[in-house]
Length: 380
Image (cartoon, rainbow, N blue to C red; front, side, top):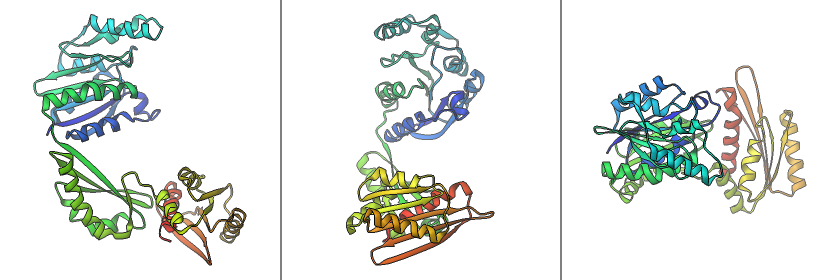
């Protein structure tokens, strides 16, 4: 099973001005085709640093995939960096210039002279035509190592990854396996509690089991390597059964399931409708419930923090005005050393209030309160 690393190129990504979505897409493609991904990294628009990053990756793995830096401007350095990394010059390819001009013609425009830079690729590289954009891609082979340079525009990168990069890798490395992952979502337990119960499973080699903690939620990832999807499913199924046996009701869903959807599904089963009043959560609870839609009658986002007894009264008023069976009030009260989370729950024939201290990073308190309140609804 070959190994790979992904290098995203661009100072705008490095500085956080734009979000890198390309590496996630490439990683999933590689995973589905059974390629081991060792690491992902980001490098700014600097030829020397990109070349060093590529050389480092080539020492560790079989496949290096770069994305970005193939445009026509001076600060698009990938072509020169790859050439430097493998010790060759760039060379002009007339056929690439013809392809670039033809695509500009289809767009009803004429290329400028700086677009000619895109017709230069490392000497000896395999050119890859880009029919959905103006930046040609290329593949460089160094012994048993491969460098694939893809554009940074997501639509172009995705097209070339599927139409060119993956077919090339499948043929070269005779890819026949797969790496498949399943995520179990939990709520109501901390990372240390879960780790205490499943620590022995985290020592498995295939499938592997790992934890990812969020504020108020912990994900358990199962990843299997196998020769076929069916074999991977069977490996995952066995471990998932044991995880469900141990973690029981802490598990609320898997993969694309969301806590808000599960909570509202519980309301739907009971024939109840829901309203919420929130303060200190920036409207996130209301937005997430509204996105699911079903049985959610609306929310009120307070701009000022009310005292707990006023939160109860406001929740009760909204519940009556909307004719809903369930009213949920949530507020986050900041403090010098900890945050106080107050939850009000009104259901038919019963009124409940919860006070929960939160001592983690203050910025995470709203997310913790959101997950905790949704988990209360799920467990009704």
